[in-house]
Image (cartoon, rainbow, N blue to C red; front, side):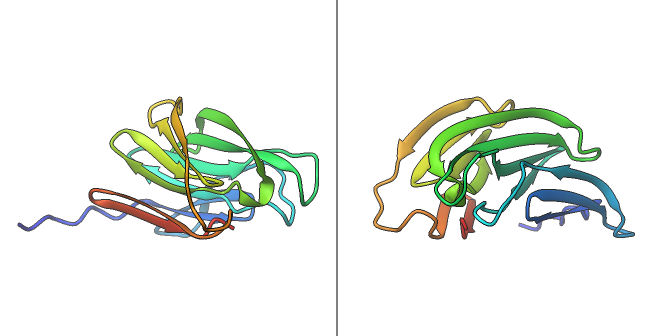
Length: 159
């Protein structure tokens, strides 16, 4: 069965360091920007996902230490066109800041995340935590992780 391709997205989002910037697809000009918590050499990267008219940004929160400091996971929801914040959730993980950046997947009205050897589920609508499960794994924290549901897959290096 043939499906017509989706129209091109009007924005291209780029995540680098501790920021996400939306660029106009036709001109390349910046349209909006979100600067997340301060970053140092131990922070993981920022992740961004677009779902409908929303952008979901995943980053490490503020921490007051160096290499061994723990940091929360911060999930921010923004309006796609304007970058206006819609909501934010701070999830305490008691996890070293270097390993906070999750592998994420949006499916079935949920945000699913593998973060620091835990599988987490949040409401797509408002970020309400739904459940968390420890993962039994022999991989070290910070190693690549994958998430799969029927029809959707995400694999990411979490460092």
